[in-house]
Image (tube, rainbow, N blue to C red; front, side, top):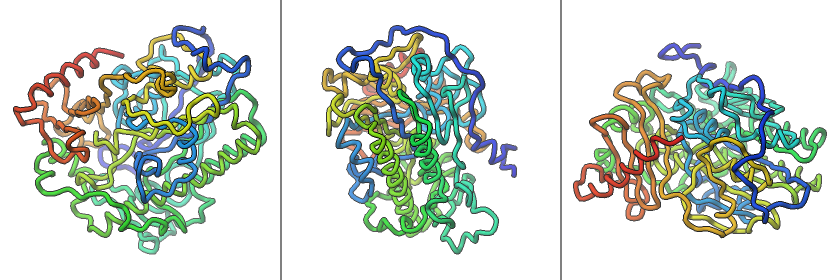
Length: 491
């Protein structure tokens, strides 16, 4: 079925993977910390990755309405990064950046469109393969480059066997299951109940594949990435998770008229038209929020099953557990749903690392970091190194409390001008976010009219007052513009 612009739903949500694998290479400049090495035995790595998960969907990030005891337990036994910034607020560029340790503009991949990673780029998983790791990806990959894992086993995909991101499959009445679509050109399902039992959902089947692998095929050392396609749309929690979260308990704001009028032109005229929630009722918004958090609760349950399988095999003491997502989403706080924006709950991802006896327990890191730092960190923790250029820096010493200052600023970017959605290309181009501990600026690059947003995250953590046009903040804009210009030339 074709959508506007000639792009099929299948093309838009395809899972891509490259042919071939880079096995050649030597241990190089991204070195291991001798304090972390554990003799000759290399640690296993369990990399749990979700899709479109905002940090406040987890209790450990401070949401009182979240029901995530298993992921919270990882945080209790490890290190939680409070400000981990995704390099792009859409899936494929973000995941590609994570796997390569390179910024999206360096790779030329800045939207969910089919573009190949340059042949010269080796994935950061290559050193694991070279050292004899069994490297496995179960579930979503969404990466178009040299094959980053030796074994790749897909899960059923978005919506499992009963839905697509846009609709229930034939035979299921959307009214019966309370389906709510976002009434914009995006038209994705943001609420409803899954028609099939829980064990038929994508998260359940993805984790089941991972457990089967652990029980029958896993050989140490292994790098096992379990990539769950949730809480990505369609947001359809099965029973009992569709009623688990009381909508009135989810205390997220709705925007005022004054806030909406102060946003940048592109957000007001284009992005809000594409994914805005102005025609949804307050009840629909509340239900969508409750279903999103209920969906996350179900994911947490199956992550608990996965961790139990690791423990049952006696592997937990020598396994690094890493939990992250590709980016988050908005749930109507600023008049919009979904991603493709730079608000905190979209551009940040949960990031938690745990390794009993090797990493601190219950530690929280406030220093902003980037997701290009993720795999360099796992490499150092495992005692491995990577030969080649990477924008990422290991977070190991930061996690261990051996350093405090890390990045002066973090960055994210997207190119609306190459979007598969024609309406986003109207007046769009490459838009970039620069974020320090206190300030965030978003603007188009290489354009005379930068049409920007500026937020004081200390005084206005909800990002409600756009200061970009206030001349009192010209010095702040000048400093952030300098940081942006310096970063823009880096890879």
